[in-house]
Length: 91
Image (tube, rainbow, N blue to C red; front, side, top):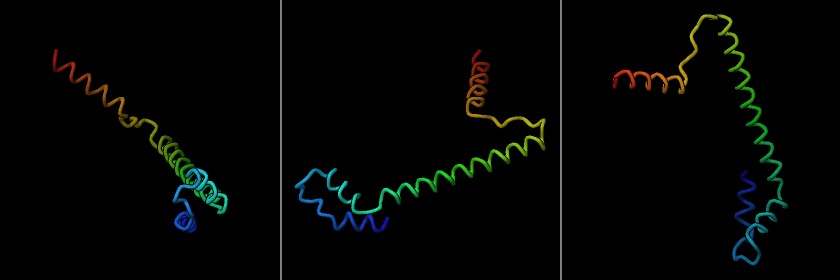
């Protein structure tokens, strides 16, 4: 990323003798920025996937350990609860 920033700082983007998109494309073509960005995106994707798998595993393990537990209140459930309370208080 530092290399990419350096390339953009030294690139002759101004004055605009060519469209800025062409200037950016020229900088990207002269670096491996796209591969670096894709690599970082893949790493983030892998981290998110790993966290999701761990959370799923933990949820399954807790569900087996506590089969009679109540599900946590979701936003929808809470909104329905408040609506019911509101309707009850105003009737």
